[in-house]
Image (tube, rainbow, N blue to C red; front, top):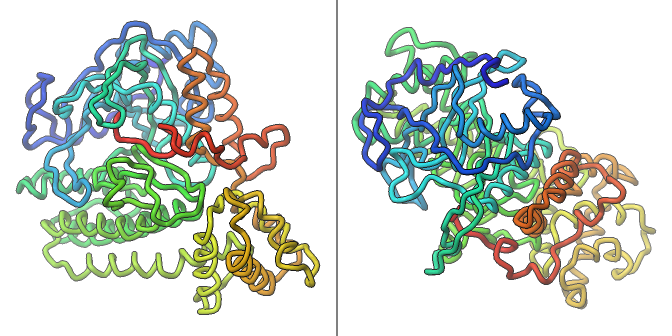
Length: 532
């Protein structure tokens, strides 16, 4: 099966590799990658499979039992077939605003690149496949809870229309992995697992930062040329140093535009990444590295799902576009080593800020059923700003609020404040608080919004951009709880539901309910750590 795929590892073939093959934590100079084979596991078993990802790769959409066994062997790392060139990538990064130096794939091993049905190279990468030279003091493994979350969220984001790496498979290993889930001195054994992630490239901002920081200009030049040639071929291939500098400006500009679009997508669906380090931002503008992510439940621009960030809140929901701009400035600094003149790189950063300033309000207005051509007018900006104030005045579930909002548009114009807010009360975690000034503020905003609408019934337009189903943390935790008892049915049902997040899907309404009270403070349902 896997040996019949078309393997074409341009990354390994075109970029310098580690001169050493020993797998132990060490600095790796002058290389883009290190050769490393996955470490075998005891009893691999396929637990989840994405047919939409498998088909274009040339793999079965519905594998037979025998095929499932082969998939489990290969995608756990127990079997490396002909054509694969396993590797771990080298990169650096700024973590929580501080330069961390060399990082690299500490628990991810790319099996190689497969040419898909469209002729696009797709890298198959195993997360949790064992130690690499970049593992530092860690074991290179992943646990079931984080693997379930990554598998489901990768696919959920794709179907929401958010650029993302994909998830092909979830395989349990039959081994135990010891983790201190909240870094509080209480490590415990957990079930091990491996997710196969798929993307055209796993190149990150930090891929360029590291050689730039170390004066490895030849490697930086080769990485830029490889990225232009294979990931951005429409921009052109460098002919000489001057042409490369020109193309790097174009490349940086496109990365800024893609990143701006990604941030707007995250904000519009209420997604919080949780660990926006520069090594966790993709050069392709994909959502990458699903760790302690979360979805806004009560609307709160200051919320972060990451326990490590609970005090500083650097990566909270409301700052994501700003953090992305800061991260882009670090990438621009790396590019500046070869470009020399910072003026045009700075212009792209300015364009990023202008895009966020103009397009983010437009995305919010689209969620409100209001289409805008050209520049967003000041009254519409005020309407959006006032909405954020209203949503922050009490605990209102963001996803349910927007999905319920069209019902308000059909009410009689003479409706009382209480009648006007009735359709969105189901979104409230504290309906008893919606009295007095809170009630007046919400009802007043609803009237201003309804007066601004161009149509009497905006449901079709609004339902197309406001999802009914997102992967709430408590739903992921319920699926994890069941999987740990060897029951994969909830993973499968959530996976299927999240394929159509904007549809009603009768019979699955329980997956669209707001977070239950028992999940408010439960581990895995409110905040998470980077431990996995």
